[in-house]
Length: 394
Image (cartoon, rainbow, N blue to C red; front, top):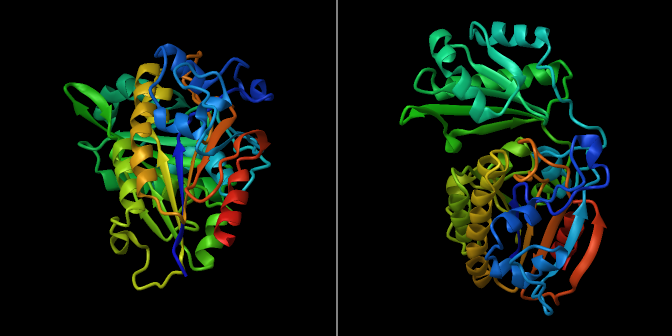
């Protein structure tokens, strides 16, 4: 049988408008990440996603509402109770989170921190409060160097974040402390979505986070469509932080990235069959069927620009992503399906630095399928799984 592939590209945090329950998540009805980024930049140049039909999903300055789109588009309304990376990606893969993950607006409980200090032998922690990551490492760097205590902080999301200078404490020690935190959170029933390693170094006199060495230690999801594909003999190729988000569950091959550009280059290589899969496989010598899912997360929009209220940088990141859409499409065969979507919002133009509870776009493109234009609002990011199942069954 001929190879059948699907490519999912998640533009992290590129929401397209507040959900009706946004106030329950601390957000305002005006939040709209893509709309505001377009307005701030007086329009964006994204001709390739525009051609597929992105402009049909809203009033996005600079992105035209084309009359004859080359693909099918829709607005997806999240079913899960959350506005974070984990719930968004899990729902894209078919798992709806009915119960929200726990958040810690007053910091983590004393008993948890005490166990963390005891089991890691770190001697103590700094912060233990909600904070902006870039701000907290700047504020506490001197104390971190004086004590060698890790900086532990959270946000409006369900995250246990550990920051340290890897010129002071080894990177592998940071990862081990994250694994210990993950285990303690799971054993204690704290229902925390992610533990995030936040390594930094002093560069030009300033504490600077090292994106390529960031790692996420997520709760393991229950069965998702990724597991169904893998268990059926398909290849599931994770690019970027996908491997971390799913705690390796349902993945056969994985490669981390240090930037959107690297993730886009790797995705293009995967589509061209130029990615050395044998080098990134979890197990060597496996035989696979004709189905392949390439699943990419492009995190810079969220991590570097959304959380830092940098709408200019956000706009440039979207434009960079768009430049890769055409070569990816040009490299696709008749048996390939491209899906471009997002996992939540992070509007850089509203107050605060946290994620925003938003609907997301989805763009479907295939050389084989007839375009259907704008399907309107659809309930559930898991709509994507319905399309995948239909695609792989043909």
